[in-house]
Image (cartoon, rainbow, N blue to C red; front, side, top):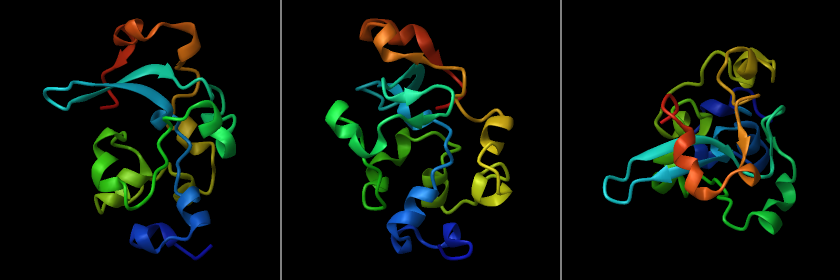
Length: 146
């Protein structure tokens, strides 16, 4: 990977650099509720069935669409349409908006655990979607992520 590749325009990143941009917070794997009238997105602590709540990583990333067909594949081309539902701290959203990465991001800190130590990740804060009915998600909205 190129030095400081994360500062390049997103369209210039190769696939490995694009994947490395992920901060490992697990927030994009949270189920969200979108108000159809206002378009407002509310994050819940209800996680995709494939999210490991300890590592904040997908347990079947290469094959996730076999289990979760609706899982979104992020790409630079899709960001204009979906950036609004990514958390404010997301590296993909930050770079799309022309903002720098946070000091706790592993590409800046050199440590993949820094996102957890900074309290930014969802480590230990999720409920698997298999434990709740969809009608219960509203009871688990997280105000600080939207």
